[in-house]
Amino acid sequence: MGVPGVAVMTTRFVSAAELMSRVLGMPDYKFAVIDHPVSSASDAELAAMARATVEQARGLLGLE
Image 1 (cartoon, rainbow, N blue to C red):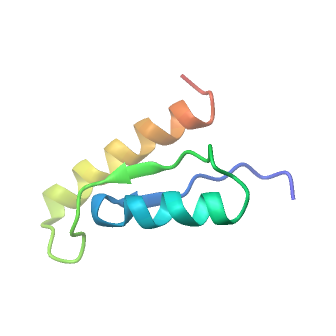
Image 2 (image 1 turned 180 degrees about the vertical axis):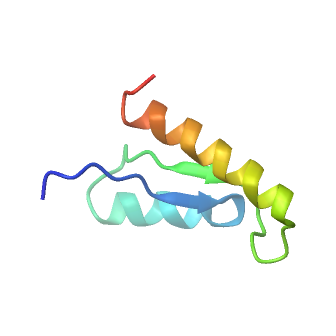
Image 3 (image 1 turned 90 degrees about the vertical axis):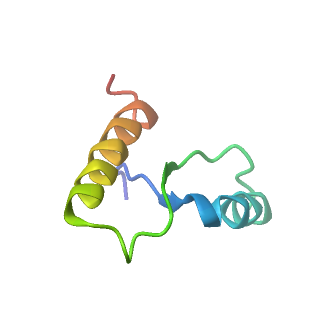
């Protein structure tokens, strides 16, 4: 649809995401990676994860 997007994975699911990208014919697909788990993270930890995601997304989208 012409809208850029970035997938975000936690460290625990990186290998599964890499496998799925290969299976779906996109072996070089890059995605942002944040710490796991997210569900028990504090507000401060979530804010840090969000900042890390934005930084990675900017790089993946060529905005840096």
